Amino acid sequence: MSNKVIAQDANSQKAGGDTIEAYVPQAKLVGKGMFSYYFWDVYTGELFAPEGTYNNAPPFALRLTYQRELEGKKIAERSIDEMKKQGDVSSDNAQKWLALMEDIFPDVREGDVITGIATKEGTSVFYVNGKKADEVDDKTFTQRFFDIWLSDKTSEPKFRTKLLGKG
Image 1 (tube, rainbow, N blue to C red):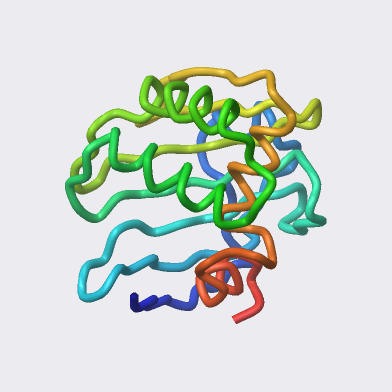
Image 2 (cartoon, one colour):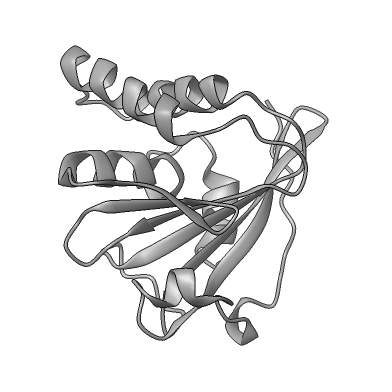
């Protein structure tokens, strides 16, 4: 697996639009990077937090802009696999969360945007191309889902570094 990441001027960019701002006060870009798998650019990720400072706690938002076609079911399956790799996901939660994400994540094509928001209450809110897809009132799910990218146990540490604006 390869991970190609692009550097951006993270401090000067804002969230843009009302979706993120509604949940993340004074949202500004923390960091941005391109996630690639082997030779394929998969998505650009952008992390937003209040004043552009991520403190490993909600509220924050992660916006993924897809660079290629992917099946929603495959996105959900890969998400569960990544959550399991970090440990402490029961088989009951894995089944429940997989079904939930299969309902949330559509098939995507180049240019589609999925925004996940961790609210200050610990819930997750998902938008697809600017339209609300679902809200998940499960703090454990919220933590595990965003840990895919933001935990120090992530399988993609270079991408995490870019999202955190440190590389």
